[in-house]
Length: 262
Length: 276
Image (cartoon, each protein chain N blue to C red):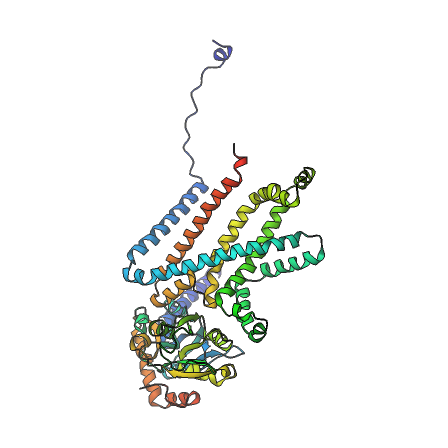
């Protein structure tokens, strides 16, 4: 009696292990963990009660629905996004990550799901008149570190005194209190902030012409190298939601123009 | 022939016993082997990943970061030492008007994280720009470097005050009384009698405090001052190469090793009267 009980237990344990193993092997088809930052409105940010919202989040949900998989979001610091992806903390990054050559050495990207240029914002009473290297000469320029925008600033706007902040929240504080003379970020991110109460201090100075090497062709979904099936699934899903109007629906709830770009 | 020679035969020395393979010995050797493997592994990794292009590109940034770390910690430690003197006096004072504020100061700065103090001083005071401007202090607080120095100075002063107080109180009361009996002034007593003895006690804790500041300063990049660790993270964010962190660890180890040796020299100097 006792022996048969143990045998049953052992057998069910083996069965469970096999079932879990099979589920893991197939995990990409059933559920995907998606890494995002949660500090980059209007693309991805946390609401005051801790929920994720934004264009990236809506697009991710639409893609998951299109691919017929369960998606779970994981909030991760921007700096550690790519290492965490490689370490397997999540399976894809949907966080407005620009497709750049430097990043492509470590991870693969889907096709772009949107593209918008960098821009510069300044306080309303600023004496800076043009968004160029000469215009910013000797001025303090804030940017979020580890971003294409900070790379752009370091390479194209090097006459400015560049200060790098961990998240956009901090450079927003510092331009409001006058510690920095200008900030560089995505034009949509800046516009959204300028529309809010916090952005009342400042105005958009102008957009910059993106550099294909620094800024890349747009924001894509980062996945681990070699996971071509997953990449193809995302690519097909992006085309599908572009075609079936879902993308436009999401786009129009955030923007007055098509953020997908050319 | 002495009596002893006759009574006790000369004995052969006891045979040398092989040291037993005790648990402690085996685990000690295993731990040593593990460290060696890790050390050799790290060196091999650095050799394999050696990339002159990256070194050319990032080495100058590392050195500028190193300089920022050294100057930041150096200035803060010296200013902190100055601030710690009145705080120590307050802590040791019998007057409540002096001891309570000093106690609260030490209590706050030892009891809260350095990163929170840095954030409060930089971003928190940034919210009070009009008030700071009105009293003419905004020029100081506008600059992240000043804020970093201020936060680190106030933090280390609290720790240094406690080190100094402990060391002064470890000197026996008889030393004060003896000095008084000899007619020495208060200043002479401290300079010639008390401090030389207190410094022996305080030396190692001071060394620890400096080492902790060197490592604690790695958070300063949150207020845009790019020290050694800030530059490391910047290099990592563009290369995604873990050797960036290994190089940072090596630089920090070199700083700490240099301090350790300097402290050994200082201890030799301060305790030279105790050597036989």
